[in-house]
Length: 240
Length: 240
DNA sequence: TTATGAAAAAATATCGATTTTTATGGCGAA
DNA sequence: TTCGCCATAAAAATCGATATTTTTTCATAA
Image (tube, rainbow over all chains, first blue to last red; front, side, top):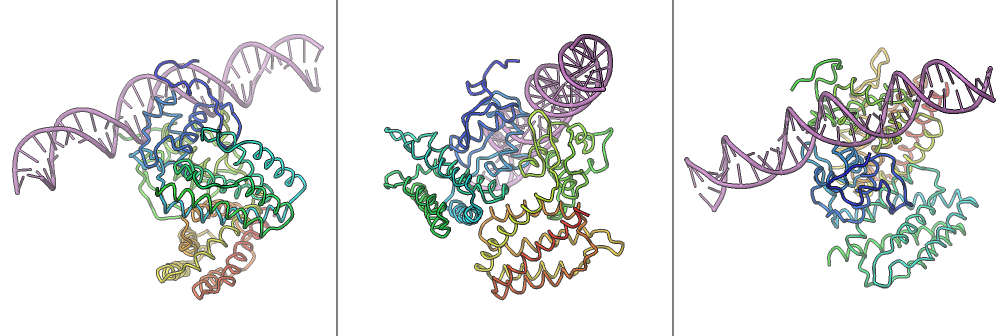
């Protein structure tokens, strides 16, 4: 069946290029709406703190209320939306306090995951890190005109996932992914104070190399200062 | 409007005594169904690995497909259900491997949360711990006939929440709560090898006292052995 | 007997309309 | 003005029915 009427172009095709993975063909409308909404939330195309009306989403994504509400419920459970009974859904706010809590929590969890990964490292884990780093290094972070490079973001996410892949806890990896989603929102809205020059490739190189060499303390130090610097730049972007 | 027909008694009243809190009056059908389903899942009244048909839940909880599906989507996002597009929802399985991963992850996160809580302890945090411990100590874990005491479980959860309450990360507290939910399921299904005698009050006392006295290492050691022992008993119950 | 595939049954996913609740906009009174 | 209060509008929540997909059944052929 082909749905017609007041629908956006995005709604026609049940697929999407995701931030944390490749293009996927969604099988249900609910999952399609979920993926699109998630992408719009991560890129802060939906303003933080604003109300997200069901009717708006219905018109925007070309689905009925049922699949839209299912998608909204998922996103609320993941912490990207705030759900209030009888009141509707709201885009989670962006605040300095939340950024600080997020950064703290993220450093705690990623340090543990990274240390476990290093302690349990195998050849295939090492290879995954090397490949992810190589792929990341082949792309510029932004285009010449300063536009963020979506593919770079995808590979960046994949690289950090590769670092902790051997930690032996899918649950912990999932938590880290949730925190990475939140951090992504902050980077988008703050535009990360692009003025400060930064050699990200060197940073990524350092943490990967040290991890592979079994220098856990050094690797963790590199990873955490990477996150803290990013957070600091976001913080500047938020204030300024 | 009053719904009639093939509905269970539970469906009539939009309220519930929750495992991790007191009785709440739910405001929407979706939230009511969510709370009931969650409770049934935590107590393994819905068999692990079994299919959870939407129609069954509709009949069981006396709501339409829309609110039921919203509830199911939330529970899937929280890791209590497995959602497969076009296939439906399944109760998450109970396996030895998952128990081990769960225990590992839980120890990592709770240790961090506990250490932070102790490092940032305040008078009101200490008082919260003391009160929670006292309340827990006033109830038997089981009735004389061996029936688990629901109120004890509630207070047990509250006690562990109190321990990490000062960690300065609601996100981490939320993750710990999710892991506690999972652990609760394992304890229910394994019936926790009740044969082994165990002085749980002493265990709780030890971790609380050490934490309040600022003995972080000792408190963490007490907390983690508490979790590991429980996990071990569950493991025995699962195998046997 | 086992594999195959179409028909039937069952279950999921979705829509369109209705009910219920909340938010809004005057309008008169303190 | 500012506060309440009712009528209205808007939005959320929910239902009942339908469309779509998966699963099962069962007859038939290899």
